[in-house]
Amino acid sequence: MAIQNLLDSLPVHSVLLTDGSHELDRAALAERVRQAGAALEARARPRAPVGILADNSPEWLVVDLATQMLGLTLVPLPLFFTPEQWMHVIAQSGMGALYCADPAQGAALGFDGLVDGGGPLALCETSREPARAALDGVQKLTFTSGTTSAPKGVCLITEQQWEVAGALRAGVAPLQLERHLCVLPFAVLLENIAGPYTALLSGATTICPPLAEVGMRGASAFDPQACLDAIARYEAHSVTLVPQMLQALVAASRPGDPRLRSLRFVAVGGGKMPPQLLAAARALGLPVFEGYGLSECASVVALNLPGAERDGSVGRPLAHRQVAIAADGEILVQDCAARYLGLEAVSREEGWLATGDLGHLDEEGFLFIDGRKKDILITGFGRNVSPEWPEAVLTGTGAVAQAIVVGEAQPWLGALLVPAGPGVDAAALQAAVERANASLPDYARIQRWRAVPPFLPANGLLTPNGRLKREAIRTQYANEIASLFTQPESNP
Image (cartoon, rainbow, N blue to C red; front, side):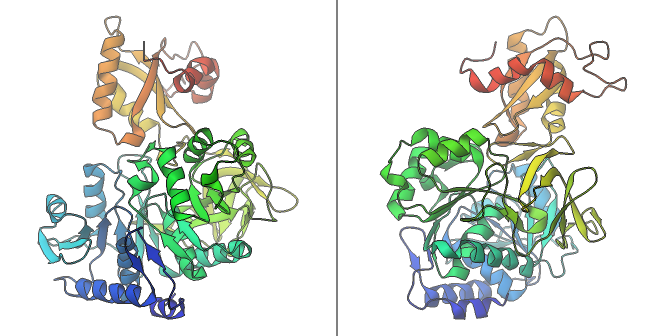
């Protein structure tokens, strides 16, 4: 995708980007991209990767387009990462400069040289020599929420991202979507591509106010009333949500809620959606369409669309992707050309990406997700968490002998805890949880827990080599686990 060609093709007088206060039409957007490009070229190391740590705004997208125009690598830093995770991303990417809202924030992360402070975001660079990462041809280095404390970076080229956006534009074209409201962070690839990229290709308006205005608070807090009010205020035609956000909107709405009238397309991805939630959303008149994607494939792979939908499925693969099912049930995606930073390529077999997800295709080509090959939790907010990560932090407190973390498709994580000894009471366990949470990002913290007897080989809950038998534990303690997410009382 040649960005100058894209800009030249956009409607002349239409509002393309707005935060609700400031609007950019084609001429204003092109000028801002030119100015950002000039600032990037004025750096001491003009070819080094550039990061961005900022709230949603038109300027975020200006920076994105400017890096594409110059052939630079952009490294989005999610606001919900911990400072330790930010530093990991900075070190791994060889980042030489950083866009941020406050130069002091950049200085705290080692970017103490101000290159450009005249725009909504300050461009700061580091005085140290950054590590040289193998990023030739990589336009975006996207780090997921991290199944461990050290998230991996997925390397994407420009064409991959716009290819997905083009397929999405074709799929939703019959709906004539003219206003897309961004409610997920731009650092999350799903919003970045399914939102503004697709809207730009369609000549539609991308509405990107600060995340607080649309109800987002950090990684896992969401105010549905604020979101509903924003949808009504901007008369949004489309939004992209994760399941937990949809659940909150459904709970906060009522049949005939006038705030929902403008919506024509609500895409939901990032985690498995319960059938009951889909039915409840449809009963309210919400035009909900479930999809499936991976960062390794530049986001969306399959999506239900008007006239081509099947409840329980994540839709048919989009036109740019082929999907197959391996002999063991694993979903394979063709031609993703994906690789992780520092690694040659993502696991693949003869051109097929092994996703790690289990599923099946029905006779009409609709894809159904059946589970995952590995024990990775996806919270209701779409955050990936390896349970072994917070479990290790919990057992590292000294008060917890064993822990199993649960929370698939839930708004928070819970845990079953085995006390380290008879002297460890409920207060000591709560203190241990609080100590563990202090070192974890909010999406990986334990909100509720229950104390349980030890997991042992003798009771069938532990392997002889000391590994948790997770499915057996979840089955035996199904009621206790359910109470972690249904009962409002505090921990014992």
